[in-house]
Length: 215
Image (cartoon, rainbow, N blue to C red; front, side, top):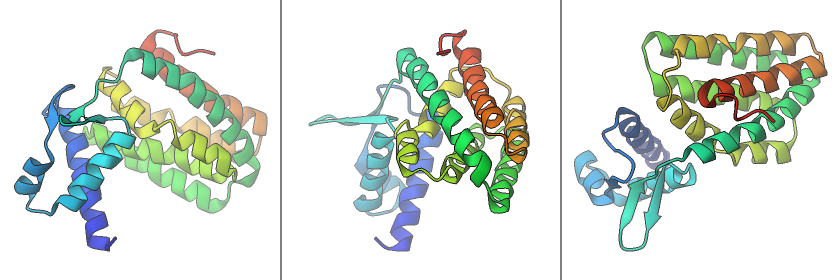
């Protein structure tokens, strides 16, 4: 795949996500490949690849002879994802506490700043992209490929995105809740970092769903 095609694929994916966020595409609405091709003046390949990525993120679903439609993410799916994520991120925090490097902290500080900038711009999608990347940096720092694959399989960005769309949470407050995680990591205390990571996810889930996500 050429670099240009890869970039187009990401841009198309971001466009469709933004339209889902804004309500231009509502659950059940069709996302027509040929319409996007004509609208954007691109070939079918990057559009098809972007839609495939969105299906993997479980934001759209494709049915034979019916094409792609925006998928309704149920409250049950959302509530079930948070206890699993909390357990995985507790482990990630424990492992990363001894393995995190200065580069790790530089990346985390950058993503926190990006979250604050997005919050100030009221850029919901941008904040969630950087939120997901913040957590991914810690999972990567844990140095466990099985953990990383398991975490990635939860489609964190997609579920967090849908969760916040369904809520009225303050974006600035979301950004601020990440500072205690960095503070705990810097103390190199595995138990503390794991607890802070787990509490962070459980608090977010319980704020959204009234406590149903606690394990």
